[in-house]
Length: 305
Image (tube, rainbow, N blue to C red; front, side, top):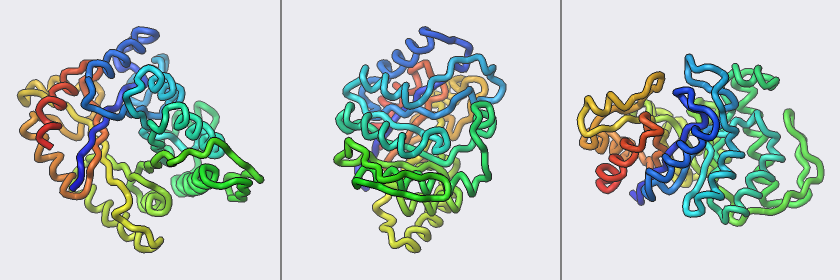
């Protein structure tokens, strides 16, 4: 197995009501406090707070604006979206946005994208919220457009949901940013097999991850895609402490965890996913904006993996 990498996810809305510049300062402080152990900073794409019970008056940062801002402040870090909703941005415009960002950051960006899932924010912002199968077909068309606009001139695409006419979109990123598709449903995994460089799924359990891998492998066979060419990644929401009790105390109210425990316990847990082929973990520490969990993980877990 190759080198294992870890990225860290930052909050785009406060869970404790701290709005304004104080919230921004906390994001910056968290990134600085995690040191250089996490090469990539991951930012989610929600337009309103999605944690159950939180008021809608909380500041919620738009994903691509946030990534652009942070990438300018931290020129030594890479950035990624986890994951963009395909429905929120026209794919031709998104292709332009990502190509521009890739150029400005000198290749420090990963495009994470999915079909979208939170009905409430769709309706609040006036987006149609079609059935999952429709949203996944829209994602399929969107990725076709993005891929072609990054590599071809005079692109015409007449899809059911999206159209472009004789469009040339520069800069052409060279190399193109990795496209990571998030999701584990059967139709989504077919999209992964056709277009994704990376696949992302939550670290719910090793058994479930393995089952989804099997489905992905079947789709790869059907579309004549090399299963091994797709990078397998896992999103892990975790609380880590020197004792089990300390770890439990770091699960802030309203946050769900994939793992709660000590460094000695998390190493074999992550190792189980690595045995399945995962070589990248996108970690959300559940005591953020506190950096204790992220620093303990960097000091006592990453070196052992």
